[in-house]
Length: 96
Image (cartoon, rainbow, N blue to C red; front, side):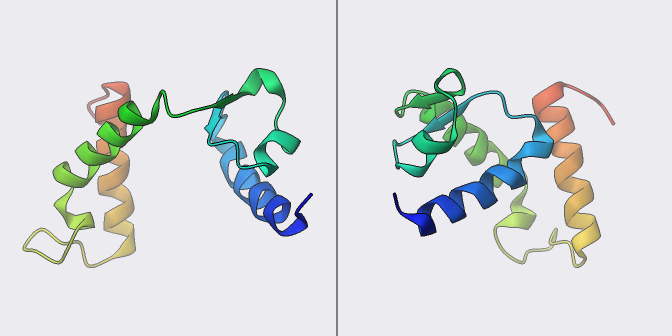
């Protein structure tokens, strides 16, 4: 057991807890197998394409995350608002 791996994994898991993650898809790193129940853990890349497609949409639709352009937000607050609006629209279909 690698305590450094476990420490990093547990920090990440604690960061994700407020989001109510129901299923973890991992690469079988080791720490994940030690700290996740089998019913919440899936090893493999089967769902990677869907996740990467969401990330691509986020990057292309929100150019303000990629580089400083004419639409670049100058404050962290505006970044948060725009990303929140995008996620509500894209993930939940909400017009906020």
